[in-house]
Image 1: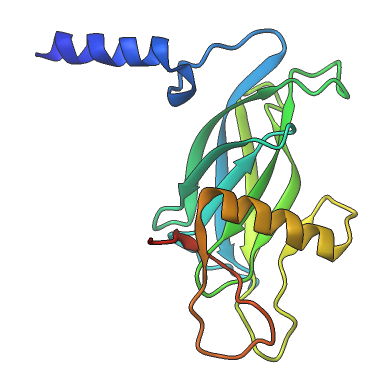
Image 2 (image 1 turned 30 degrees about the vertical axis):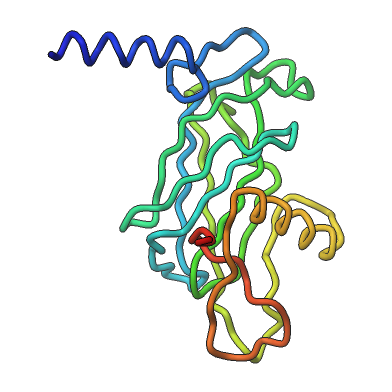
Length: 185
C-alpha cells in the first residue's frame, strides 16, 4: 500500500510539476522556501492567524496563496525566474500581498528570493487595524506607485482568486478591505 501511494505521488509530481515542490528548475529559475510572518502594526506586533498571503511572480502570475498559522507564519515553496538585474546572484523576486479580517491590506512589491544563496526568502508584514477615524487603505512597500494604481492592482488579484470583502460593522467611507476568505456562490 505504501509503495502504491509513493508511486502515485511520483506520477503526480512528474505529470503536474507545478503542484509539487519537485518542480523542475534550470539555470534561469530560482527555487526557495518563502517565509511570511504577519503581525499587528504595534511595536510588539501580535501574530495574525488566518491572514491570506498571495505571491505574484514578476510576470504577474499568482504562484501561491496560503493562510498563516497560529503564529502568524506560513512557509511557501516558490520557483521564480532568475533576476537579470543581479547577474552576480542566483536570486529572484516576488510581490507579496497580505489580507486579513479586521485589518487593512499590505503589499510588498519587491521580496528577494534566494538573495543569500540559502534557498529562502523572508518577508515581515505589519497590518494596520481598520479604524473609522483613519483613511483605511492598503499599505505598500518598495513601489513608487500612485495609490489608485495600487488599489486597482490589489482588486485585480483579490478578484482573480475569488476573495470577498470584509463584513465590517463600522462605516469607513469606502468599500471595506479584502478578506482572507473566499466568496461563496
